[in-house]
Length: 111
Image (cartoon, rainbow, N blue to C red; front, side, top):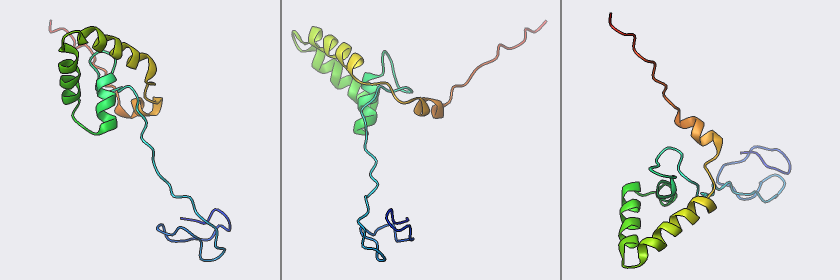
C-alpha cells in the first residue's frame, strides 16, 4: 500500500504514514443489496437477499412463502415481492458478465 499524501510505500495494516504522518483511508468493500442475476426464479429478489445475507437462497424462498401463507399475508407477500422487484437495483453488468453464459449449439441431425 502507498501513502496517498507522499506516495511512499507502507504496510497494509498501517493507519498513518511513518514518513509524513498522513492518515490513510481503510479500504472497505460495502455490500449492496441487488437482484440476483444468477440465482433467480422469478425476478431474483430472494436470490439477491440470500446473496446479501450470505445464506442459501432456498431458505429465503421458504421463509418468504411461509410468511406469505399466513392468513391475509399472501396478498401482502405478493405486493412486497413486487415492490422489492421494483425498488432493489439490478446487479451491475460486470457481475453478470463474470457469471458467464453458456450457449448451446444445435447438434447436427444424424442422417
